[in-house]
Image 1 (cartoon, helix red, strand yellow):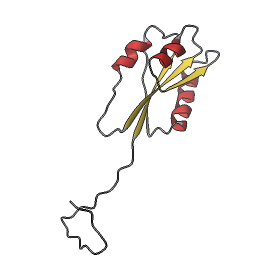
Image 2: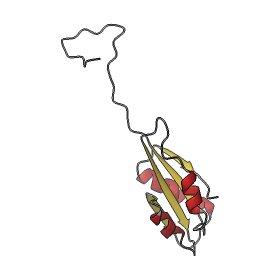
Image 3: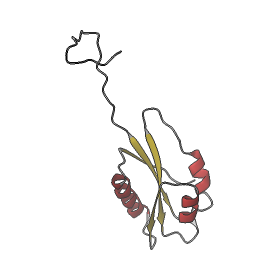
Image 4: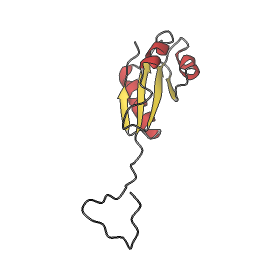
Length: 114
């Protein structure tokens, strides 16, 4: 269909194309000493979802003493939040939500490391 101009008359069957807002999903993954399991978890996450324009990953490293943050960065995780010292799941969840909102998430999903 061609775009309507000011001189066009629209009938009941005509549709005016509307631009759709971009939808951004951030999947947050709280981690505590998950350097070994994080790569497996990241491989299991979706890269595309119908209706979602952008998918990003955010790892919350909750004071890990292993290489969790480095593993996340090396794997291409978009955002890494580091808590030091270890603060627990609730604090990690809250820090992750704040970071996701800061990075413009429309949808936030929490996913546990396996």
